[in-house]
Length: 150
Image (cartoon, rainbow, N blue to C red; front, side, top):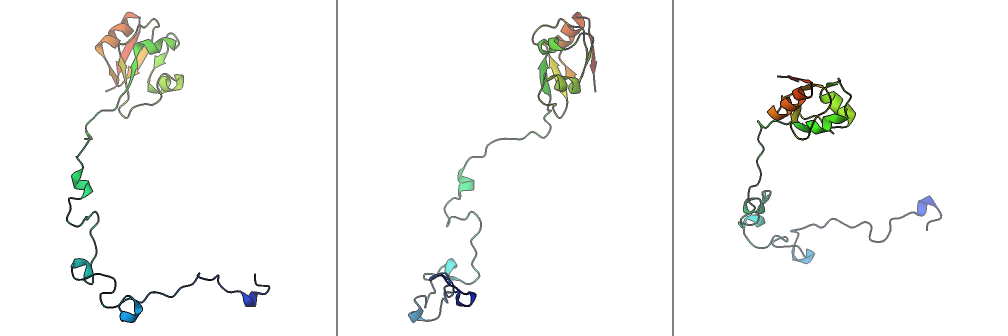
Protein backbone atom coordinates (compact mmCIF):
# COMPACT_ATOMS: atom_id res chain seq x y z
CA UNK A 1 0.00 0.00 0.00
CA UNK A 2 1.21 3.49 -0.84
CA UNK A 3 2.35 5.49 2.15
CA UNK A 4 1.87 8.82 0.32
CA UNK A 5 -0.86 10.14 -1.95
CA UNK A 6 1.73 11.00 -4.58
CA UNK A 7 2.65 7.32 -4.94
CA UNK A 8 -0.90 6.04 -5.54
CA UNK A 9 -1.43 4.08 -8.73
CA UNK A 10 -4.18 1.80 -10.04
CA UNK A 11 -4.11 -1.93 -9.36
CA UNK A 12 -2.46 -4.10 -12.01
CA UNK A 13 -5.00 -4.86 -14.79
CA UNK A 14 -7.48 -2.19 -13.68
CA UNK A 15 -6.78 0.03 -16.67
CA UNK A 16 -6.61 -1.37 -20.21
CA UNK A 17 -6.32 0.32 -23.57
CA UNK A 18 -9.33 0.40 -25.89
CA UNK A 19 -9.25 -2.32 -28.56
CA UNK A 20 -8.81 -0.62 -31.96
CA UNK A 21 -10.45 -2.91 -34.49
CA UNK A 22 -9.75 -2.85 -38.23
CA UNK A 23 -6.21 -1.52 -37.83
CA UNK A 24 -4.18 -4.17 -39.61
CA UNK A 25 -3.42 -7.87 -39.34
CA UNK A 26 -0.89 -7.33 -36.58
CA UNK A 27 -3.57 -6.04 -34.22
CA UNK A 28 -5.41 -9.37 -34.20
CA UNK A 29 -8.61 -7.69 -35.35
CA UNK A 30 -7.68 -6.62 -38.87
CA UNK A 31 -9.23 -7.43 -42.26
CA UNK A 32 -12.89 -8.24 -41.35
CA UNK A 33 -12.52 -6.60 -37.91
CA UNK A 34 -14.21 -9.41 -36.01
CA UNK A 35 -17.40 -9.27 -38.10
CA UNK A 36 -16.88 -12.48 -40.06
CA UNK A 37 -17.23 -12.45 -43.85
CA UNK A 38 -20.07 -10.82 -45.76
CA UNK A 39 -23.72 -10.80 -44.82
CA UNK A 40 -25.96 -8.23 -43.22
CA UNK A 41 -24.12 -8.27 -39.90
CA UNK A 42 -20.82 -7.46 -41.61
CA UNK A 43 -22.19 -4.18 -43.01
CA UNK A 44 -21.93 -0.76 -41.42
CA UNK A 45 -25.11 0.48 -39.76
CA UNK A 46 -26.49 -3.00 -39.06
CA UNK A 47 -28.81 -3.25 -36.06
CA UNK A 48 -30.72 -6.40 -35.15
CA UNK A 49 -34.49 -6.00 -34.69
CA UNK A 50 -35.80 -6.81 -31.22
CA UNK A 51 -36.81 -10.47 -31.03
CA UNK A 52 -35.10 -11.37 -34.33
CA UNK A 53 -33.80 -14.94 -34.33
CA UNK A 54 -32.02 -15.10 -37.67
CA UNK A 55 -35.08 -15.96 -39.71
CA UNK A 56 -36.27 -18.68 -37.33
CA UNK A 57 -39.87 -18.17 -36.20
CA UNK A 58 -39.45 -15.85 -33.17
CA UNK A 59 -40.52 -16.93 -29.70
CA UNK A 60 -43.30 -14.34 -29.45
CA UNK A 61 -44.86 -15.83 -32.62
CA UNK A 62 -44.24 -19.48 -31.68
CA UNK A 63 -46.19 -19.23 -28.42
CA UNK A 64 -50.01 -19.38 -28.53
CA UNK A 65 -52.14 -16.35 -27.83
CA UNK A 66 -53.86 -16.65 -24.46
CA UNK A 67 -56.45 -14.72 -22.52
CA UNK A 68 -59.01 -12.04 -23.16
CA UNK A 69 -59.89 -8.93 -21.18
CA UNK A 70 -63.52 -7.94 -21.47
CA UNK A 71 -63.58 -4.16 -21.15
CA UNK A 72 -67.35 -4.27 -20.51
CA UNK A 73 -67.15 -6.76 -17.60
CA UNK A 74 -68.78 -5.65 -14.35
CA UNK A 75 -66.85 -5.93 -11.09
CA UNK A 76 -69.12 -6.68 -8.14
CA UNK A 77 -68.07 -8.00 -4.75
CA UNK A 78 -70.51 -10.79 -3.91
CA UNK A 79 -71.88 -11.38 -0.41
CA UNK A 80 -74.46 -13.96 0.70
CA UNK A 81 -77.36 -12.98 2.97
CA UNK A 82 -76.22 -15.59 5.50
CA UNK A 83 -73.13 -13.43 6.19
CA UNK A 84 -75.35 -10.48 7.17
CA UNK A 85 -76.59 -12.23 10.34
CA UNK A 86 -73.64 -10.87 12.31
CA UNK A 87 -74.77 -7.27 11.78
CA UNK A 88 -76.93 -5.37 14.29
CA UNK A 89 -80.71 -5.71 14.02
CA UNK A 90 -82.33 -2.73 12.26
CA UNK A 91 -79.05 -1.37 10.87
CA UNK A 92 -78.49 0.07 7.40
CA UNK A 93 -76.20 -2.17 5.34
CA UNK A 94 -74.20 -0.65 2.49
CA UNK A 95 -70.78 -1.31 0.96
CA UNK A 96 -68.94 0.84 3.53
CA UNK A 97 -70.71 -0.86 6.45
CA UNK A 98 -69.92 -4.33 5.10
CA UNK A 99 -66.24 -3.43 4.70
CA UNK A 100 -66.08 -1.89 8.19
CA UNK A 101 -67.69 -5.01 9.69
CA UNK A 102 -65.18 -7.25 7.89
CA UNK A 103 -67.85 -9.11 5.90
CA UNK A 104 -66.12 -8.19 2.63
CA UNK A 105 -62.44 -7.44 2.08
CA UNK A 106 -62.92 -5.09 -0.89
CA UNK A 107 -65.62 -3.11 -2.63
CA UNK A 108 -65.85 -3.95 -6.32
CA UNK A 109 -65.48 -1.24 -8.94
CA UNK A 110 -69.24 -1.45 -9.59
CA UNK A 111 -70.25 -2.04 -5.97
CA UNK A 112 -71.64 -4.97 -3.99
CA UNK A 113 -74.06 -7.68 -5.12
CA UNK A 114 -76.11 -9.48 -2.45
CA UNK A 115 -76.79 -13.16 -3.20
CA UNK A 116 -79.32 -15.55 -1.63
CA UNK A 117 -77.01 -18.08 0.04
CA UNK A 118 -77.80 -18.92 3.67
CA UNK A 119 -80.63 -17.74 5.93
CA UNK A 120 -81.29 -14.29 7.38
CA UNK A 121 -82.75 -13.79 10.86
CA UNK A 122 -82.16 -10.06 11.48
CA UNK A 123 -84.14 -7.12 10.11
CA UNK A 124 -81.91 -4.99 7.88
CA UNK A 125 -82.10 -2.16 5.38
CA UNK A 126 -79.84 -3.31 2.53
CA UNK A 127 -78.44 -0.78 0.05
CA UNK A 128 -76.50 -2.45 -2.75
CA UNK A 129 -75.72 -2.08 -6.44
CA UNK A 130 -77.37 -5.42 -7.24
CA UNK A 131 -79.58 -7.84 -5.29
CA UNK A 132 -80.62 -11.27 -6.53
CA UNK A 133 -84.28 -12.27 -6.45
CA UNK A 134 -83.62 -14.95 -3.82
CA UNK A 135 -81.73 -12.51 -1.59
CA UNK A 136 -84.51 -9.91 -1.91
CA UNK A 137 -87.12 -12.49 -0.86
CA UNK A 138 -85.09 -13.56 2.21
CA UNK A 139 -84.39 -9.97 3.32
CA UNK A 140 -88.06 -8.98 3.00
CA UNK A 141 -89.20 -12.22 4.72
CA UNK A 142 -87.02 -11.26 7.70
CA UNK A 143 -88.77 -7.87 7.84
CA UNK A 144 -86.08 -5.85 6.13
CA UNK A 145 -86.08 -3.61 3.06
CA UNK A 146 -83.97 -3.55 -0.09
CA UNK A 147 -82.76 -0.43 -1.92
CA UNK A 148 -80.97 -0.97 -5.24
CA UNK A 149 -78.69 1.91 -6.28
CA UNK A 150 -78.97 2.32 -10.04
